[in-house]
Every structure is written in C-alpha cells, then in structure tokens.
Image (cartoon, rainbow, N blue to C red; front, side, top):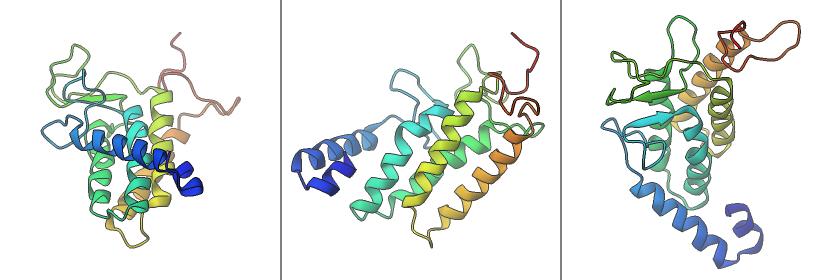
Amino acid sequence: MLLLYQVTQDKRYYKAATLLRRQLATQPRNASGGFWHKQKYPDQMWLDGLYMAEPFYAEYALEFHQPQDFADITKQFVLMEHHARSSRTGLLYHAWDESRKQPWADKTTGTSPIFWARGMGWYMMALVDTLPYYPQNDPGRAALLAILNRTAEAVVRYQNHQTGLWYHVLDKPHAL
C-alpha cells in the first residue's frame, strides 16, 4: 500500500495504509507493551507476529514523519529477544505468553517448548525488512542490528553441514 501510494499518489492507498496504522494503535498489548500475536491470543507474542506488523509500522513511521514510533517498534523486538531467547542455544522459542496461562507456556518463563525454524525465519526477516526504514542515528537501530547478529550466529550453529538446510525444529535433527 505504501509503495503504491508513493508511486501513484492515489489517496485510496494512503487511506488503506492509514487504516492499517490505526489498527496498530488499538492492537491489544501485554502488560510489557508487546503486541498480542492476534486479538484472540491474549498476552502472547509469537516470532512470526513481528513480521506481520513491524516492517509496515517502520515504513509508515518514516514515510509520514513519525519518528516516535521507532521506539515502540524497537520495543517489540527487544521484548521477544529478552523473553524468548534461550541462554543455552541462543535461539528464540517460537512464542512467549507473558501471563503463562497457555497450556504450551512454560510456567516459569512463559515460552513455548520449541525453536521453530520458520518462526525464526520470519523473525529474522522482520528485522531485515524493518531496519532500512530506521534513521541512521536512531538508538533502536543499533539494538536491532545486535539482535539480528546474535540471532544469525545462533541459527548458523544449527544448520545441517551436509545439506546447508535447517530442521523444522532447529535443535532436534533426529525428531520426525
């Protein structure tokens, strides 16, 4: 929508983008300020959920001169890294439930039980697709680059050296 608006200056694309941006303003959040994955998943943040919002949010902030939004965008990535990153593997668990009420949530950490390769891919792509919109001097830019580098270093350790691929559950190469 934003690219179409930039190219055509057609107000319909601006209206659609603004409607989506307004939805982000009312998206439910957990107590720490993280977007719920979906409105029907209270207090839950999922890795792939960051791809659903942050690249668009950052592009909108840049295009329409809303630099204050970059702090909120940074917060979403920082929350996921802080709560979902395993100190043992460096990988991020697929989801985090701040309330710890979900049956899949670890009762101490709130994390899901697995490192889902596709979720890690969406999370890393969200970082890659968000970073170009950050102003060079924004303090969140360095934080996001550091998160991306830590995540890439962890993921490469789980790459199959023979095929160059990854397993669906990154740390379980023998699980079917």
